Image (cartoon, rainbow, N blue to C red; front, top):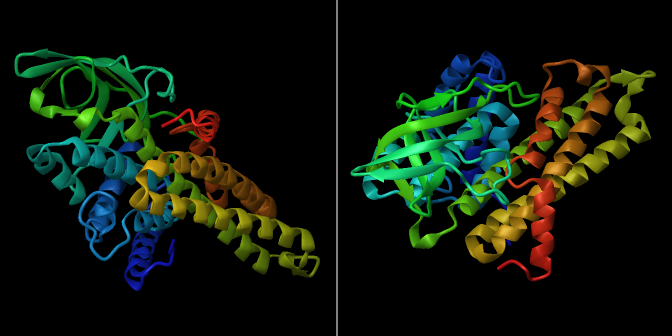
Length: 378
């Protein structure tokens, strides 16, 4: 396992960091305002379209290490702007992957091409009564009527729903899992108001209702070879949340380290106090262990995909919980400065909890990890 990044990869990371932090400094990427969020996201997608970022893990990525490069790039973008990161990934690495994996050549041309060129915002709606889909079968359903499909159902917690051009809605069609691609202006599609969340304010999340929405059959994606579509989508979500946790941990640790070097207390930098040094040591240990576990998961997706599902769960539990601990310790080091709204540590702290409840929650993940250890999962 070689987790060293090439000069080409490091140049990509530096390019993404410079461009997105520059945009963050010029505007409010973390502000809760869907129209502004849409404008900001389109600017970011246009910027990223001139780099290999949007193609990683989806399209041709010659010169890069597949999912390992993707994880490193995710960490950088998530550190630069947590909200932009979440919106970009929901559009590209979930909606985009779905079209890439299950779409026909015509469907890829219609939806994937503009998506990877930064010309379209996508969303994927899967959660219904709760975030949990592992123990709750999908009730959203489609019914064929000639060359059309009529869809009914309701979804909750859909990232990008208020600003997406197209939404892929997960449901059931003739007893099989399907994704219904619905344009934002479609009749019967009702998108709820953006939810008030403690973190990721710049990534609009809302519920939606589908009432007798008619779409052409060509706007339906069906899993190939009877693949478990919800399980695949959930794994993509977990991968995105891994990157989010790494980015938040990176931000919190670096801000706390720099503050400890520059802030004075009792006539000397607070880094001179042993307790602060211990906190930073614990934070760095958690951060670097999180990186290693996340990178190993990315490497395993490429080299031993059968083992990747359980390893992804292990990584998500550890990285998500470590991010919360690191952000909390950073808040403690910054003291009053960290408690003031708007600084990067305070923002990271508010975002960190999301990764533990979204995707496969840490509770369900632990059950599934235990089942795998006992040989109950294939």
